[in-house]
Image (cartoon, rainbow, N blue to C red; front, side, top):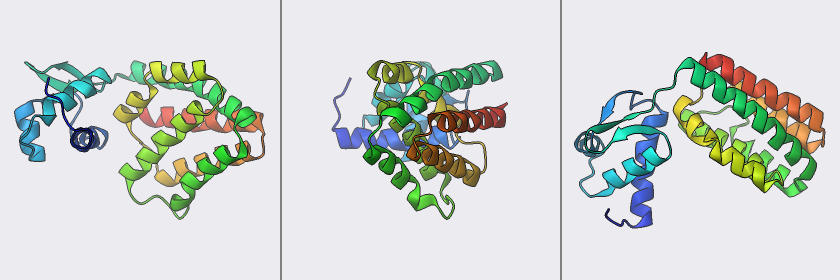
Length: 205
């Protein structure tokens, strides 16, 4: 496999992933190197490297020779994955509320400040939503739990399902979670993340 400069890889990776998240590449639709190179107007060796990376992340299924496609999720898979998220993320939120230094809670709050008047760009806000959940897991103070969060492939799942509700509603739920964390009210924080994920689950089923 060709070795690529990191910046070239990341640029192409970001463009292809955006096509997946924004559903420009429809789940189940066949993706070929030629077609994708034409769509993105890329004429180097980046595409196959990026496609293999996305396959490793469970976003694509198939193989390069016969074509890849965006992974399709059935309702049962979506329901089960949200149940896993609730089990894992209620604990990450509880531990973050207990253990995180005030500076980390402030970082989480500052992440949302640019969107207080209402998120305008759905894709930008999706990336913030993704970062929000990973930041809590990464800084909850339990490295094993963070590894579980990663091995459960929660982030690729978020990439595949996307956001399916009004952005203002999601934003307010994030603010409610952070407010409970700021008050060091772990019971309230757990309740707020549970509501947040249950609402997301219902929006996809």
